[in-house]
Every structure is written in structure tokens, then in C-alpha cells.
Image 1 (cartoon, rainbow, N blue to C red):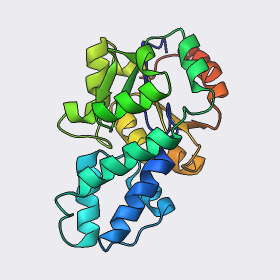
Image 2 (cartoon, rainbow, N blue to C red; image 1 turned 120 degrees about the vertical axis):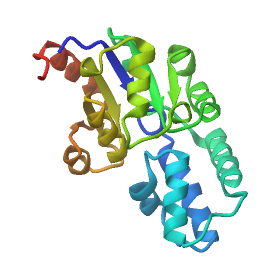
Image 3 (tube, rainbow, N blue to C red; image 1 turned 90 degrees about the vertical axis):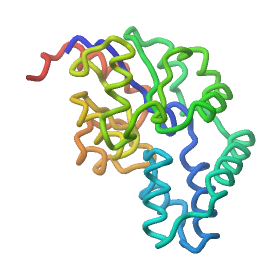
Image 4 (cartoon, helix red, strand yellow; image 1 turned 120 degrees about the horizontal axis):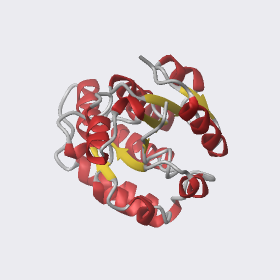
Amino acid sequence: MAIELVIFDCDGVLVDSERLANQVLAELLTSVGLPTTTDESIATYMGLSSASWTALAAEKLGRPLPDDFLDRYHAGVFEAFERELEEVPGVGEVVRQLRWPTCVASSGEHERMRLTLGRTGLHDHFDGRIYSATEVERGKPHPDLFLHAADMMGADPARCVVVEDSPFGVRGAVAAGMRALGYAAMTPAAVLAAEGAETFTSMAELPAILERLDAEPLRP
């Protein structure tokens, strides 16, 4: 395959933030009349851009979310991250040893990534190579963000590998013509595989998977 670029999602792949963020989201949705558990929030909204998940939540609620909903969500998430956020186990050591160019492509806003990647010591490693769904017209599950990242990095999409943890992210990577690897920590491996990902459960497995893919013939 001769990999030209490895694209990492941020939340749930680099930083262990998904359960914290979805706990905040579930509590807020419940408070405005849409009863939601943390697990339901993860299954329904994880991996979507803010524009996408707020539209979906409003549709389920049957009316627009309150004007201050996103402000309350971000405030709650940032507070939780300041208290508890850690990197995904083992990922820091792995990404610093990879021999291929890397970048981040996340549904999260840059402000959020400055906090999360900064708190876990990963921001400096990816500095200048961090891309947000706010930079493109359509977020995940559309391919726009991944294609934008490849373009900015000067990489052929067919020679890009995306590391994702949500079915929406995997779907976007596949739509971009990229190989998708599904980190099955919070989402069942079968769900990620159904979207087209090769799955793994420990970041320690990632280098060997990438070495194997790099040696494979390029898919037609």
C-alpha cells in the first residue's frame, strides 16, 4: 500500500474523552426533556460533528434545543476534562514511534482539541497537523474532513489510513477511499467492521497492523 499518511481521530482514539463527554451530553439532553443514558448517547451521537448531533437531538426531541445548550455542553465537558481526562492507554508512545506522517482529523472544535491534546501532552506532537470538522462543509459521516486532511498533508487518499472509534468516522473514511482501522474500545468491533473497518482493541497492536498494510498491494 505504501502508506503516505495515518489520520487519527481525536476523541476516543488519542484522548479517553468519549465517556466523559457523553455523560455530560446525556445529562443535558435528559434535562431538556429527551431522556438519554450515557450508553445511549455514545451509540447515537459519538463521532458526529456538533452540527450533526445537535440536529439529530432536536429531531428526536421534536423541537429546537435551547439557545444556550451548546454553551452548557461545552462548559460541562471542559470541566470534566480538567478533572479526569487522560490519553488513551499506550497511544502516546505509539504515535511518537510511527515512521509515517500523521495528523488529526476530528469532529471536535480546535478549542476543545487544544485542551484535550494539550492536557495529555499530545498537542505539540501534532501541532500544525490538526484538522477540525469546522473547516469543512460537512462533518462525519461524510468524507469531507478526511479528504481535507489528506489534501492539506499532500497525501493520496488511496494511500491514507484512518484510525477511528465510531461507526460514523469509519463510514466517512471509507467514503473518502481510505483504509479504516477501528479501535474497538467503546464501540463493539462488529459494529465498526460492518462499516468497513479492520478492528483492533489495543493501541499496542497498531504499529504491526500499519506495517502489514504498508506492504500490501494498493487496492484498485
